[in-house]
Length: 409
Image (cartoon, rainbow, N blue to C red; front, side, top):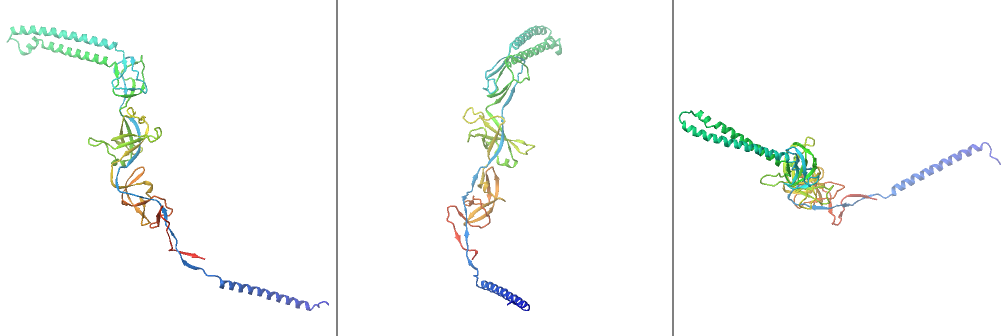
C-alpha cells in the first residue's frame, strides 16, 4: 500500500523536528561536560621554595709592600765608540796588520797600516840639515857680537842707546834665533809626519769594514777602515714621557736604573744581558713623541763571558727597573676591570671596589688606595657581575638555601 500524496509533507516535517531535537541534545550535553570539567580541575598552589647557588671562584690574597715596576720598551743597539780611520799623510800603503779585516778584533796600540816612510825620512834629514845650518849661523853671529862688545868698550860714552843695539848686533842675533826656532819646528813636523806613516789602533775595537789594500795610494781624508769600540755599546730606548719620573738616571752620587735586555728572535731561550740607564737625550721623536733614553752595556760582544753578543742596529726588548714605589699593592693587570675596579670576596659575597692606580707596567698595576692587605681578589671570570652576589671558593661545599618563589603544578 502506497502513501498518499497528502501524507508526504507530514513526514518531512517530523524528520526536521527530530533532527533539531537531536542537535540541541548534543549541544546541551557538550555544555554540561565543559561545566563539569571546569568545576572539577585542580587549582595550582604557591609553595614558598627558594634555591640559591653561590658562584664557584678562585681567589688570591694581596699584601701591601714596596715594589719596583718594569718599564718595557724597545731600544736600538748603537756603538759608543765609532771611528773612521783616515791617514794624515799621503803615500802608498806598504803593509797592513793581519787583524785589519772585517770582523777582526784588534787591541789598542796594534799596528793597523803603514805608509811608505821613505819620503818622510828624507824630509827629516833635510830639515835636520837646515837646523844645523841655522845653529851654525847663530854661533857665527854670537862670535861677531862678542867682538862688537870689545869694540864698544873702547868707545864707551860716545854711542847712544839705540845705536848700541846695532853695534852689538842684537837685531841680527834675534833674527837668527828665530830662524833656529823655525828650523827646530820644521824638524819636529817632519818627524811627526814620519810617525804618522804608521797607524795604530786607538782603542780595543771590532773592525766593521776596510777600504784599502797593500799598494793603495792614500791621502788625508781617505777612508781606510771603520772601527767600533768593544768596551761599551749604547742602547737608545724610546720611553713615554709619563714614565720618565720612574727612571733613575746616572749621576755622581747614584747609578742609573738597572736594565735587562732580551732578544727572543736570535738569543737562546731565557738568555739576557744587563745594562744601566745613563742619561736622557733632551729631545722628543717628532713622529712618536717619545723621549730617548741612553743605556750603556759593558762588554757588548761578550769577550769576557758566555753571554750572547749584541749586534749593532738590532731592536732589543728593554726592561728598565723603575724607582721603588712604597706602600702599594701589585696586581696583575688582567684582574683590573672596567673603570679601574677590582672584584673582592668578602663574607662570601662579591664587592666591586674602585681603586687608584699610580702606575701600570706591561704586566702589573700598582694600587695606592682601594685595597688593603689581606683582601681576597677574585681571579675567576664571572658570567654575572653584581654587587653582593654569593661566592664560594673552589674547595668549599656548595650552599643551597630556600628563599625565592617558584610555581609548582
